[in-house]
Structures are given as C-alpha cells and as structure tokens.
Length: 233
Figure 1 (cartoon, rainbow, N blue to C red):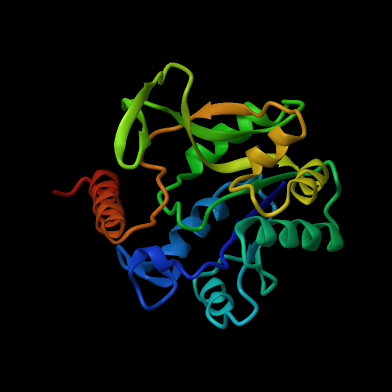
Figure 2 (tube, rainbow, N blue to C red):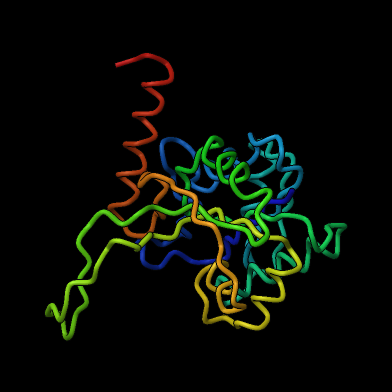
C-alpha cells in the first residue's frame, strides 16, 4: 500500500514568502506533521512526496526527521492533478502494481492522524471502487449571484471532500489522464469515469491549511493535542 503526497505548490493564498509546506507549525515544518502521520501507519509500506523540480528543501527534511519510508521526487507540475499523475507514474516505474492501493493526501492537511488514515483503509480496502475521507455538511449552504443570495441549497446529501483519497493506482492513473488538469481531487476524476467512491466520515479538524489564519488554528490544535496526550495544562 502506497501514500502519495503532492507538494509542489507555492502556497500563495497563505500570504507567505515561502512555500506554506515549510512554514513552522507547533515547532515543526507543516509538511513534517503530515508525513509523520503516514509514517506511523504500518500498512503503508512506501510513500512518495512529489515536489517542484527546483525544490531543494524537502529531501533534507525527510532525512532530518527520519521519515524513512518516503522518497522525494522533483517531478511536480503546474496543477495538483499533474503532480499526482507524475507521482503515480513514478510509483509504477519503481515496482508498484496497477491494482495496488494508493492514498493521495494534501500536504497541507497537516492535522490528519494515523487513526483517521487507518479508518479510511479499513473502510475502503474491500471496496470495488475506492473512497475518501469527507465531512457531512453542517452549515446552511447558499448559492450566490454577484455576492447576493440567489437560493438556499439543501445540505441533506452534501459532504465536504477531504483527503486521503484511496484508489487502485491503475484505475486512478487512467481516470486522471482522461479527466485532465481541471479536476481538483482524485474522486472527481473517478466520478467522471462513472464510478461512485465511498464517503468515509471524518471530522472538521482534518482541514486544509490554506489562508494565513489557518496556521494559528492548526498550531492551537496541535498544542491542545499535546496537552491531552501528556496530561498537562
């Protein structure tokens, strides 16, 4: 079983001069929190971090923090789907099989836990399609026209897609090749193939650190977890 972490973005929306994956969160580069969670899942035997071709940072971090089952490849593309496709091709070129499972995860979802990853694997491992972590929508959803409400959309069947998203390597590769770079997640590509991925419930803490305030929230959550784990106040 493989993990694939696309990490070639610049993080422009985070309002930082450095790529957001390398910004400090609770004493560690953001991406190290992500990689440590996957490193702790025994069923994931190999991982690949896909970075931009000119990235000179990631390999040193993986080595420094002992993320021994992850390789780093400077083959990232302009869009997320380009990086994922390049990563899938790299896995296949280095021994992965078409029917092997791969978990694709946003590097910026640094609050993911090994327990959540295991819950996805448990739910999806026998599924004929694959699936993803997601959160049932709790808020009222509005459709807008020029920043004014045009209608209220029923939330009864709405979910917020998260990652990891877990699919067999071969079918996912084919789906992304056919869908092109317009899709923003792996499930969307599989859906365009006429397939229906399984939604596996997760909580709101598995959010994607995107904007500047998200860093403070992520840091607060890490500190809360540390206090809970060590029984400190």
